[in-house]
Image (cartoon, rainbow, N blue to C red; front, side):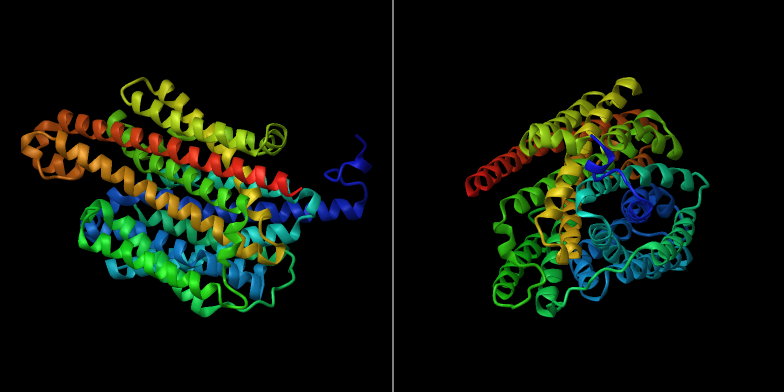
Length: 500
């Protein structure tokens, strides 16, 4: 193939300049994405330090220190994409990075739990502007012939966000000060904002209105759903708060659909989900992040308690999962074209589900065997992320690139939240039941060790037993849900083929 026949190979100085600009935009989109996704994972490493800090947060406050960011992020990410489409994706991305940095600085400076939670909320608001508009600027700055490849790379790199969060967070927190994490994030976010202003081109804006009624209803429905998911492990899935939150969410979602069907320019038209591949890709993204963040929630504690790894060692110990993602981004799109989307996703969910079962069987095995199972999970993630990102983005028109980015971000965050909630519920139930009599009634390793320091080995064994059960549940749920996604994807492919 000659350079002239291959759109990926620049053939003139002007084309090389365009290609350099595209790579510049891809780089800043990837770095910004890693920053906001990495914080989701990194904060979990800081929880023990926060618990022992002079702020003395309660167990419920610790939960909300972790979840306030995810709650705001997930609820506002679709409206954040719509803001970029309407007022400018470049400006929205730069503004989001600045807000993200300000929120990180406020968190680091917090003299009280209330200010710390406010900082987490502000950071989540910034993230809700950043992630969807990374997709928006990437779609509009990349030539159509190279757009799929750029989105595949971004999708794979975005999957590395949690891994970088574990590694970078572990390195920063090894100083012994949780504030160090946020003091480094704040200037990095501001530097990325300057990077965006310096080199990201402006794109045409969408004349569509922001649909305030639909936006408010979407946010309320998502807030209620996430409160039910987040409080489920703590309050009990049958508690009045959790059931009420789920019922309220169902009612508001129904009202949202009815309103959006009547609005001339809806924020997110429910009829779009008649597009089979859009529905399949959204479900696939949800399932992928359900399994991966269920693992992230458990992995750090398993390595620290079960193997005695340090915080920094724990960050490095998850690197084997990153290898397939780093290598596969370039090759997965071509593989998916050759064997088809359905078969690619079949292997992806199979690898993730079986890998989670393998990790459950290797909690007492030497670390190299545990690492091999991490590689298998990483292979599944590497197969799923690029193809799901391309399918979900291409299912929507370019003028709704921000909303498309918001949709895939929302499905990621909802999948992550549910994965953590389900895994946490199983872990707590099995762990509590396996505790020695002296530690009965405790729900964390730290609390159990505080009341029964002489039962250290038994308490750690109880935790590992609970983690094993939780990983098996996550693996089984991933395989079952993955089968549903595969059926939806196969059916979508048949419908598309029939339409032709």
